[in-house]
Length: 391
Image (tube, rainbow, N blue to C red; front, side, top):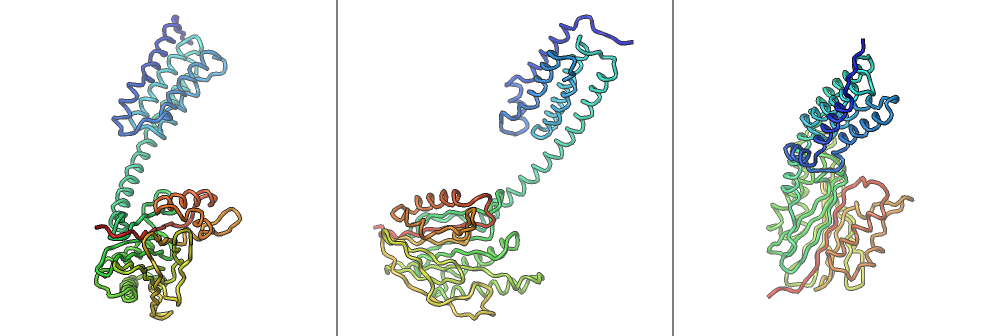
């Protein structure tokens, strides 16, 4: 025997009042703050589903839109905490009871009971899914925290002013969520002047980060006391060789690192460079842009045993107002839709009169417009600007 409620209007009004209380902005904001999540309009989607399902069912009872109420807790599981997901499921369950007890549906009929059971089952499954999601989010947050700490230890913020040199940096890891990659950089004030390094490790992933850490650590240890750049490069080579010998990895000896070392002495209007297989820097002198190639090849780090251990030092004029653009192949080997490499020298000429920060700003925006889709390589660019000595 079926049972019908004789006052459907009152029941329907109670269900509507419950919905109004459930979507009160103050209540929702409190729940979100307790969960430690920022408020986003999308968080209202599960409640909106309940409202729309109720309205549609009231207007068209023969279509039985009440069966869609189970989608609300399922949607809440993707964005709400466990307690919030259960609350949404309870709200959907109450709304289903209110609709079934009204003139629209018969509470004692099998379809109505099945709808209630389905909402209960979906809510419990959604709560479990929400718990799993929150656990993964916490794990990811912890990993990101470790990555940020590793970034601060490996790629420390560069000083904007080192003596007579101003420095600006552009750095982007290839992975969207990555903080560090295989590209690295450093700048130090030494008794020999300002010394800089920019490099790129062959390969990707943790092994590339590990190799970058070895080279950077060695640079920081030896940058002050190495008498010249060739000796500094030789010490980096030794450190990388020792690191690879200590690894059990069969591919360790095949790891290599391209680097560019730069020394800008204080009392001389020059810059000294040692290029170990790295893309050549660009020298900006007024409106002139010149590629600074190496007069003789020097081996990448960890390749001296195969290619020889001679490191060629080159000297170029570097006066007040000149800028030196160092970069990795993530810049020069970026491709457009046709597979054409990014014409760095040509593009830089457009902004040759810009300051270091504006120059990198233009370069960043131009690269984003030039490259289609997602980059598959890290990117680093550094501008060293010679300024007049401060009194």
